[in-house]
Image (cartoon, rainbow, N blue to C red; front, side, top):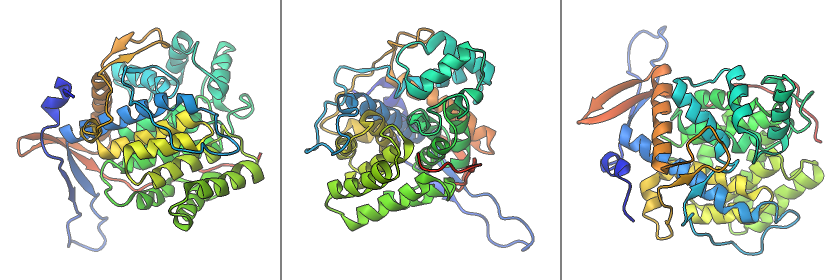
Length: 404
């Protein structure tokens, strides 16, 4: 496959992630220096491009499996073509793409909610369901976010998967800064959800953010990312139980699935469109996929429930970790550099996927610089110095909801 020119120019340099540790010495009363790390622009573009492509492939190739396997998983792992005919707009990608497009146009990371209403009124009129649909209806009634995502006004706000599948890109544009990633994700998730789904927002954005620099085994990064969760949340339990089930049944993903599905859907009463049930499926896909992109998405699709959204999230996380060059080198890779917009009329009707990645990169640079980072040159390469963060619960559960 011929790589797009935009990538050929930018990713030929070797990956370089150089942590800079706090200086030793000094007076004990002085606060520790912030931890920083360096990442070349070309490397960050490669990760963002990989994450975005992974999300597109997972979400769109997962559509045939959406809500097909609920009581039981699929009997075998499915195959798929890696979007051989190109990518197109779908709610697994176009909510984020709409926000990112206008963030880039305005040079603003958090679009003001009145502006969000204008954007949604112009664009969110097809391909929209459940909590997002109710939020859109409320906007026509004069309600502005975050009230459009309040439990009092939106009956789907307390469980809906929008808190997971509409936020992955905010982790991509905040490399190594999980608190910033969570805060950005929360701003946009609150348009449609509140309560428990916001815990999913914090977890998935934090996990993806960490994967920009964290090369530890994926199970360890998942455990680290759980620091973004309120310990009282359902998803905090899900993370612990998914890791335990994977360790208990390392060669039997169906047994692990049965255990988690019984606990969260059957016994605890969360539905198949909820963040705890689907979060469990994504975690199992990542763990049983063993760091292999194709195998991970196969598991995400076969595990069932909201399988397209789950494959999108798994693909975003693993694609961000592996990078586009790794995905493009796989024998299954077919995706042409083409994205067709069928749903959001104010956006271009067609663009290159590589252009979308560049848009995210511009936003990532703004995030880095706005949060204490620097742009510099190292060995002739444009490089970003990032002020690293540990995951933290940005939005605690104010009143943990009982099981449905």
